[in-house]
Length: 303
Image (cartoon, rainbow, N blue to C red; front, top):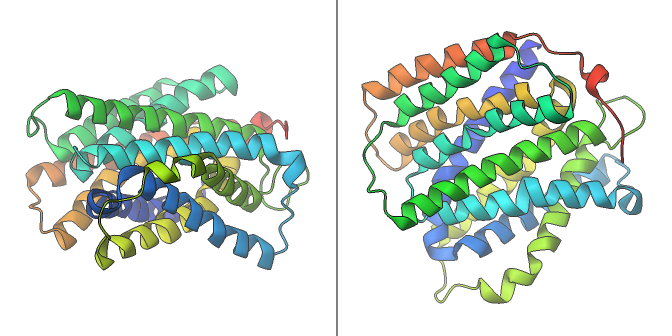
């Protein structure tokens, strides 16, 4: 993987780590469903404007099935799940559970993309989960029904992200290649389809009181930065470097989530943060240096 791709992964981790902070501020006022709906709708509109300006061909009718599937598994379901979880889980815990996505991705890649689960890759994935566990600590939450349901929602979201990465890998194409769906078209189409899928929830998701300006700006920032910009970067990376490597970004997200929480929410950072960060970076090294088939070898076009 090139240094540029590595930098993109770190940047993605930084802005996705911020999304959990935005959720903790916005969801209690805006509501989980409306937050998710606004997030996917605003991101879709922004991406459509970018796709139009760059002359990306959407081919709506031909690609509708792929857009709808990725929209369901990459936006509607996980955004709703993480919005709900933010009502009961601290940001770092949601980020920790989000880090299981590469485990699902590695498993699904073995099942559906014929990738090999090498000992090095498996060790890196296991070490990454251990690292994020150390990073956020343990035992700080009372495991009641709401907390357990929120944790289950985060795991469901992580599994959805893994499924969507497989769909993108099997239907997308690297930049400049022929055939398949252009990465920006996939990002745009999936966001707009995600908004369409969630549209029926609007009458049931309106808040009882007007949200504050801070909450509204958090939704806007999350939509444009953590969703639109992030998807425009992440989907091409999935096609280029494969789902398992691309989804290893999840290991760094808790680190940035705790960093932003320390800066903006004044949450304390202990020794576990430093130790966990070291373990996470070691895990990233194992996963990112594991041998993978060339992207073209595993790529099939089904759009």
